[in-house]
Image 1: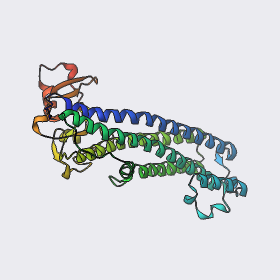
Image 2: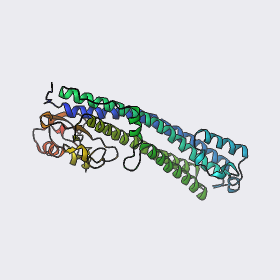
Image 3: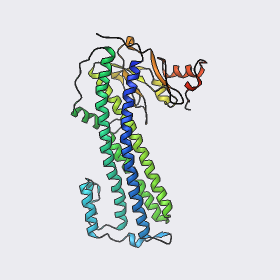
Image 4: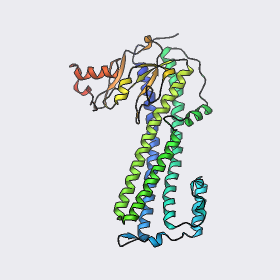
Amino acid sequence: MVQTRSSRYWDKRAIARLTEAERNSEWHFREIKILYEEAEKDTVASLKAIYESFYRENKFDMTALNKIVPTAEVEKFYADMEAAGLSKYLPKRFTGRVRRLEMINAQLWSRTKQLAILENEIETKSHIETINGAFGKTIYDTAKGIGATPAFEQLNSRGIEVLLNTPWQGANYSKRIWGNSNTLANQLQQTLTKAIMTGMSEERALYEIRQRFNVGSFYAERLIRTETNHFENETEFIAYQEMGIDKYVFVATLDGRTSDMCRSHDGQIYKMSERQEGYNYPPLHPFCRSTVRGYIGKEYEPRMRAARNKLGGKYFVPNMSYSEWIKDVRFNPNVHPADVPTIMP
């Protein structure tokens, strides 16, 4: 028997699904952050060794840096790159005569690429967990909400693979990881080149290298959080399609951190056929925290929805859009001051 949910059920469940996915990705990002810390330590140790071997009287020994690397050392490096699946990216002449400075740059590059491979493995695992969780929970929550079980087909491994590999905003997460690693590799090599050209002190060079890794770690965090939002909402879209639901409601987080973009869409109802990720379907921007819920009729709309005050505490308000909520809490004298959010400029 179909039932009407007259409480805050729908928004609550949509937000709970996204929150669970975000919590799961947080654990995986911690793994990735450790990888960046280890890569930074290795690179710093290598740079210290370079200074110890080639830095004399505030300048580098260019004669030593331009010497040819022993063949056995080059062959071992090439074999290591081949085992990691990276040898195809090396110059074809790399099996021949290689100067020491070229080898140092290649080692910097290889460290970032091995980091990217491990980061991709962890992030792939995280996104598969998000997809599997989102699909089943979306259908379960909807079935529980209406008191009937919709007909649907389970999302299989092939469907998950297609979802993982489908580009959005120009690329999929794997290509973005590779692109971020290219940026990091180029920045590390530029730092080394500047150090050699200017005779930069070891302390300054180490500081710049650490800063590069800090930026790289931030990019990794931004990527996994944004992609988690993408896969959570994309999977919910697939689930709603399976259930024959043809409209969705945009759900933004009611707090002062919400972007102007998400505020403007909050509570709006859109046709599934007209959804445009990045425009009227989340994520709308990096670190987006918005989600959606299926719209199955006015009679199923909630009377209440959750909001957060500036201290992070949750409270409930009548079902309203973000713009209505902002006006209400800012000017309603009956609202406790702790419930007034900090409004971002």
